[in-house]
Image (cartoon, rainbow, N blue to C red; front, top):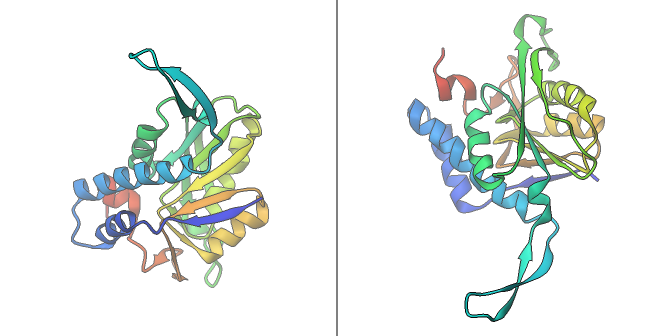
Length: 219
């Protein structure tokens, strides 16, 4: 069953505010994405199944605790290049995750004025085999029109069907969320904000600009 989780933790919102600021420089922008990735990882863990276990302490005393079995069954797919810092943060939480990459480019010249649809060019896919007990996490900082994520998922699902599919974005739009859930009703979307608009170029407004360019340099 699909769902949308907006992470309203004050620290996440403070980091997002800095990312939105046009005066935030490249290195600090990239570090902010890493920090958000870690925070979003914590939120995802809260939804995982846990089991009660018993261990023996160095004092020879039994103590009850928990084990999160799902941590050994995570697959993280990063959409190049903007998702790289976000995934760096996620991996700090999901240290045993199997990793994959998809290089996807929105073909700007395919845009028809008045439409929010874009053609997506997939130029490279390297994804591990996905098992039925896996939790799939697909990371892309901006979920604007949903064109990129839906295209990426079509390629990723060729490698198997996980028990959960989670999309991690920093900012999403209502339009993008609805499109993803229309095509993949079981998807779970974790985001830090849902912005109200998409402009004529397909960018989220107010947004934070082009995440890839701001993190790694560009126009």
